[in-house]
Length: 174
Image (cartoon, rainbow, N blue to C red; front, side, top):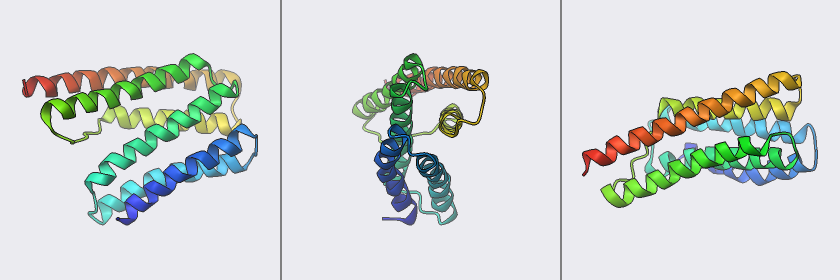
């Protein structure tokens, strides 16, 4: 297993630790752990590209780690009343659509290629930044609301982008 993949696995293993510290209000630990998860997300990609160690496992694990991280974070935020439930539902729905789309594409084309889209990368940045500011509790509520709305818009646009891209890909193989 490459160093980048090991770092991604560490990020996945940190998720339950983060959730436990977040739900139990163990500030600053949950903020530190979440910050570490963000850093490992950037670090594993940098190492994989720099060392030319991009692997099929890594191209699957990294986005899955991001989805698990965002799912758990927004679910915990909704549970704690820090995030409206509808925001969590939008984020979850997009990710479910992407995973289902990938599965359908796999069954139809027999291809496991996962092609990250710019809209997906922007969505991850918005989602991570928004939950990070919520965790830190350093911005007034109106700014958090603006971040949440911006995140929902970027997430929805990304979902539509993936649907259009996946549809084109399937039509090429029809």
